[in-house]
Image 1 (tube, rainbow, N blue to C red):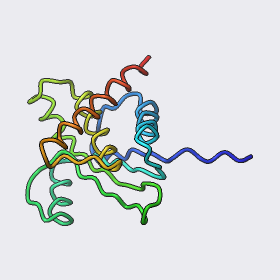
Image 2 (image 1 turned 60 degrees about the vertical axis):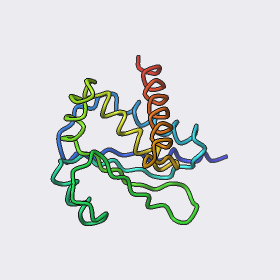
Image 3 (image 1 turned 90 degrees about the vertical axis):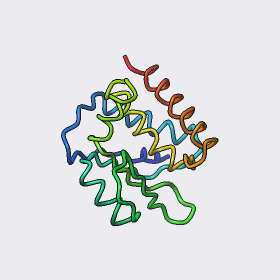
Length: 148
């Protein structure tokens, strides 16, 4: 019997980023999709600058402002998730300072945030935002429980 290949999760760095235990982070992302009962095929994370993400925000979303993350669902119909998640390292650094948390914690939160969007979580209303934060916290704790 042939085993189905593990979903592909890749990190691409357009900006230098200190992200340790990348294999574990990818494992937690795959587990997140399993726990959320959302099949995953492929997920690309692109770590970039404010300016790079601003151009994507303008070009694809017609928004002229900085943001920490943009998530694109490239899935076909109702098949397994294929997505691209762009994360501004500049915003993550600023947000970590503003929220008085470590850069790594804020980066992980944003990484999980993008994955949760692809699992159907929203964050435009107050109720949705509370559910999103609760899920982010759940997967941050899950990640921390696996750190050796």
